[in-house]
Amino acid sequence: MPRHPYSALLLAASAIAAACMPASASAQVRRCTAPDGGTVYTDRACSAVGATASTPRGGNAPPNLPRTGCQRQLRGLIHELSFAIDQRDTNRLASLYHWQGLSHSGGYRVLERLDAIAQRPLVNITAQRPAQTVVAQQRTGFSGWVSARDIPTSAPERPPTSLRIDQTGASGGGTVETVFGLRRHLGCWWVSL
Image 1 (cartoon, rainbow, N blue to C red):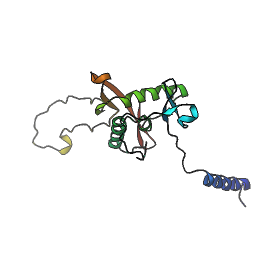
Image 2 (image 1 turned 180 degrees about the horizontal axis):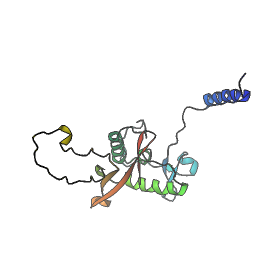
Image 3 (image 1 turned 60 degrees about the vertical axis):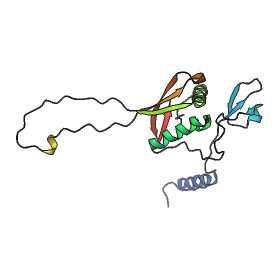
Image 4 (image 1 turned 180 degrees about the vertical axis):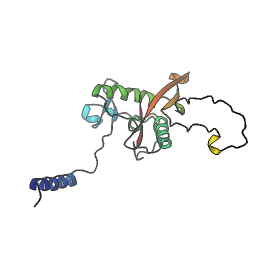
């Protein structure tokens, strides 16, 4: 007989409840235009909040592209970031953002910044690495016997810590630079401001 008879029953009940739950729940943030011309972000249909759907200015993106936020490789994150900005797709850009720990009002501020970033034409994305420290080594004379351990080697390359986004400014004049911090969370790469 089990030590705690109710623990087996509780475990079985939780397994049944987990099997009955939907496989995944994901919300899509929609950008809508309010009657006064303002922008409204919602996870509901635009008509539910009295607004109309805004169409992205890029407009030529295939409508059924899969939206995946979790990028296991940094190269994939840079590609998705570039695609989201090229298509002026705030939702796709928001799917790459590390939202962990943001308050409700903080989330809206970040979303407005992401929308502004998504609406500017992209020039370049650069992965930035921390500066390497260089240690001067004292040179010694040749002793006649050299071991592979004695040959100076360079320090291993550090992983990038941020992405610099270069974009053209308003009306095509000047450049705007945004630096996204890089975060590794649950095996995925995410950006943060």
